[in-house]
Length: 234
Image 1 (cartoon, rainbow, N blue to C red):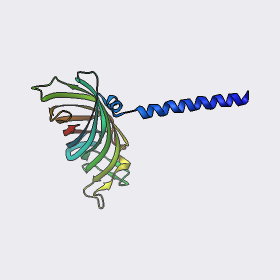
Image 2: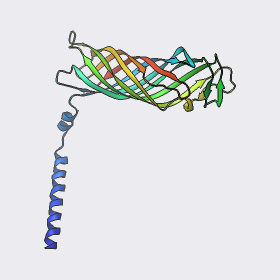
Image 3: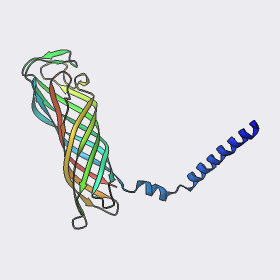
Image 4: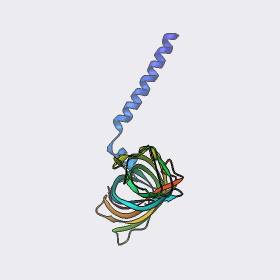
């Protein structure tokens, strides 16, 4: 009986392996196309103007213009392609100028800044957006307008700062004073232009408003940006 039981288990396992192997053999490029139906992939290069909204011990003094880039993945919600869930991965370079309105302790400098000192801060975030993209019907068969809104989660990357008036405080590593996570609201609008059967160019504006304090040792300093998104979908 034991021998028959072991033989039965082996036959059952072999049958499952054969079934799995046959499914793999029968998987064709058509199956790949079916799986990717409703998806589109894009890339963008975006001039970005970053700034801060600061209160209490800091004041926002100006923005920084830098270049950002990323990939976009849209999943259409319905056959008419009017709505899409949009995500991806962006490398966003933000920052701005801050001025102290009181004593501010900085771990990166191991020093306390007094009133009226300037901090020129540059922050790189790796961001994952979760957006709803809404698209118009085609205009003259070539143009499509769109708008988007949603949330963005950011993870701090390279962070640098200049603090005038302090020796050795130019292009210093500032990670100790900037939180690792950032959370923001994103909204924007733009236009797409059909280049061919599959490819589409896009130009739009994206606005990100920080929803949490980006700094560690002050009560509030939200990081924001406006980006001119120039991209292409495949």
